[in-house]
Image 1 (tube, rainbow, N blue to C red):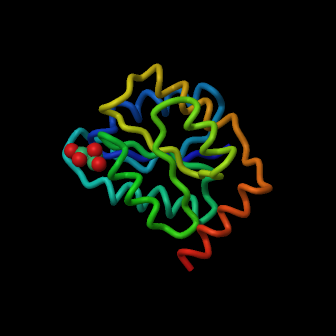
Image 2 (cartoon, protein in one colour; image 1 turned 30 degrees about the vertical axis):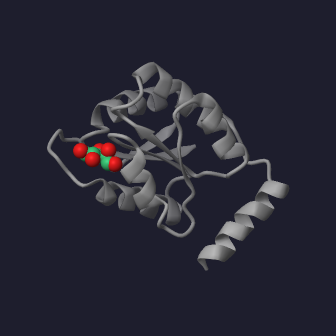
Length: 145
Ligand code: RB5
């Protein structure tokens, strides 16, 4: 599995921890930055993450900012991206099973490292259930086309 990972300065510490976790579990990581503590703009990293998925170079994405809110708003503007901001394991599981989310968004300043690891693991373990959930996603697609 290939996962694109991006963060702004507010998500950098958590990104470092989760990249290490992903690599340890054999996931191929595409790191699009930031790798600096300097203040930067989360939409730039949302764009890099979205482009990497939409071009087919990654299967899923992980994006992190301070709260996760800005990154969610920014990346969900890209057609074909379904990003879920998850604060617990259940939300991450449902995001994959029911919403076919292809990006997990986390708030680096609002959750601890261990919880974030569990949320990420849950997101990667699950698959989309299809069926009635596909119908609902089709309705979302229709509403934006
Ligand atoms: C950066 O200070 C902060 O605004 C950003 O990381 C994020 O939380 C925005 O939603």
